[in-house]
Amino acid sequence: IASVSEHQPTAWGSFFFDLHLLVFLIPAGLFFCFKKVTDANTFAIMYGMTSVYFAGVMVRLMLVLAPAACVLSSIAVSQTLKTHFGHLKRRPGTKGSKDLPVQREVSMVLIAG
Image (cartoon, rainbow, N blue to C red; front, side):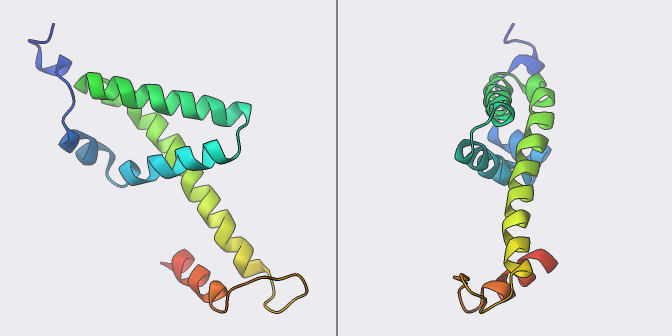
């Protein structure tokens, strides 16, 4: 079966070419899923890990990895933005606020791009 080119193991270049920025966001999404374990996060972890494994085994199965990569990357982006928007909502100097001196400015720059 390995004689067919679609059944060959996937090269690293294919991951970068097909997934682009998602390659770097998948581990962050897994981190946030492991940080707060729920049934939905457990499903996302299992779906992502099995998809990465099977995409590495066969080039054709990169099609299985794409939706899992999108789910995990969206979790990473969502949690990161939630954190930074939380810094923008708080008023500096309020009681119980433990903000760093430039925390609001850093959040503004990261959100605005």
